[in-house]
View 1 (spheres, rainbow, N blue to C red):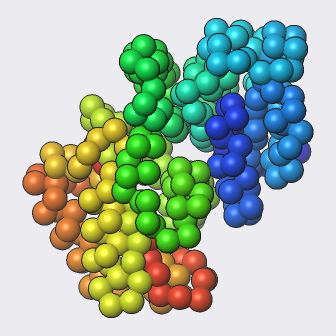
View 2 (cartoon, rainbow, N blue to C red):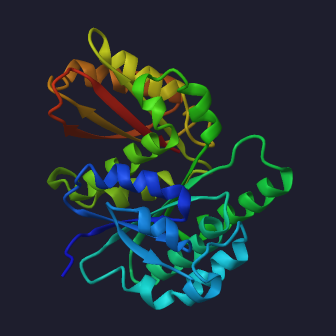
View 3 (cartoon, rainbow, N blue to C red):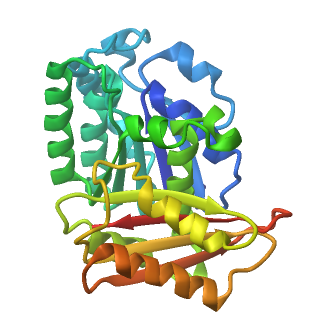
Length: 305
């Protein structure tokens, strides 16, 4: 029996590379599941558990960008989707690109099923490029609004900002959006399985989701003043629909440090920078993960609202 408590579920072709990146990290308490209507795409995945949805509805050939077919595919496969969540699972993280039929059509149905199975549901949604037609943006905005009513927490990733802010961001630019979203997902999975943060995912995100929009930022630094470089990047280069943290009331800061552990002075610098940029009395929660890569790099993820 699968005893993993975190289910990381990719819906549609956009999620495939992200799931493989996460699966290759060997997270102890998380299972990666790739769901798609396209049978050929599913066969290419070697790292994750796979689930074909809508085999009858689409005849295994995908939705062709038709969100109604995506919705009907999930409805057709309701029983199989429900079986993804056993008595041990408690946290479901959905990843979907809202630019195709399967992601935008099937995700809301799958989220509803997960909620019926008593899961705490997080949805990470990737937005379209700037050159998408206006009517597409309207459809996406409406779908995201509906999803916010269903899921416990929704984070909208703006791919335009990743492309703009991280064009020259060393080797990680090769992976683009996939890499940055995978960092956020791995952070959530680590928090959920960490003995120091047991139960904190739900509590933290419940506070943050009360805001109108969520800020998501990522930064990293090495060498002298590494903490300043990392927090500057995390505060300056938003990857979400919210541009900055000014006015936020709650912030969660996740720090991953490599060979050289973070010091109390570095944490103080990070905390001060967040206070200064928020312009408010703000509640800050920290979580720190120890990595064992052979360098002194630290990376910081901020989610705030």
